[in-house]
Length: 332
Figure 1 (spheres, rainbow, N blue to C red):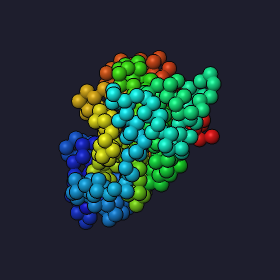
Figure 2 (cartoon, rainbow, N blue to C red; figure 1 turned 90 degrees about the horizontal axis):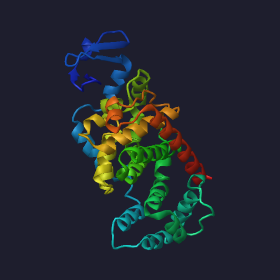
Figure 3 (cartoon, helix red, strand yellow; figure 1 turned 180 degrees about the vertical axis):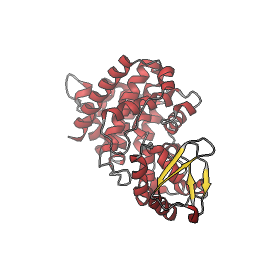
Figure 4 (cartoon, rainbow, N blue to C red; figure 1 turned 120 degrees about the vertical axis):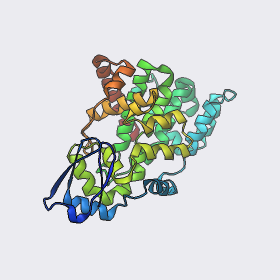
């Protein structure tokens, strides 16, 4: 029987014959003195259903499953390519968009949402390009091209259809507003990373279903979701999301921020990781998330970003309003 300390990740091999008969097991980790607590029946079921051996091999299996995340939406790849090429004109982006009528419709819905408060409705992509500019248009394309992917029901996490997309939209705006206050040059990256920060959950969800009882029990005890994922898989949704998004050719600064958005203190000073961490925590504090209500902003992040409670409250309010206006305008 293998048991992993949730605090320091030390692995214990315990013969089943030495397990006590009482249903609630508690062990003191010899490495960090942390308390390892788990229900005996769930531990036995977990051992049977989940291989706790070579986690590196298991991760490679995930990475080799092409169906875990689809290829990057072509329109998103092309849009980023055009915007980053100084020799290209924004009208080139309009021409690409116009070839995809469904995408055009979704982008125009976002452009005409309450949040952007345009004096008159935008009726064409060409018009949107001129009025909104490249950066704002890229944000809209990111939203529109990932909306279906992020609107799936996640049974393993007990998250309903559309909840991930709604949450991600809120984090994207919160991250963008935090960047404006702290490192303005990162605003565009912050928005994109916010949209994609939980993409790894789409990868892990179907594999989490068979361990759901163990997962729910640990989360109900107060263990953060990403820590329970590490107990089950050896890695969490942030890490596997980082690896898959690199296959999408998402900029490295965004991938690294996504990898460390739950533990920015381990990111070696990645500014975007701290921004994303604060944004995610702010949005979760606004939501009634059923899978993880043990959310806090790391004190080191607040110091790093130099954000006080007044600024945080202002950002939280603005991000919530922006996300609601864009999200509801988009789905209606």
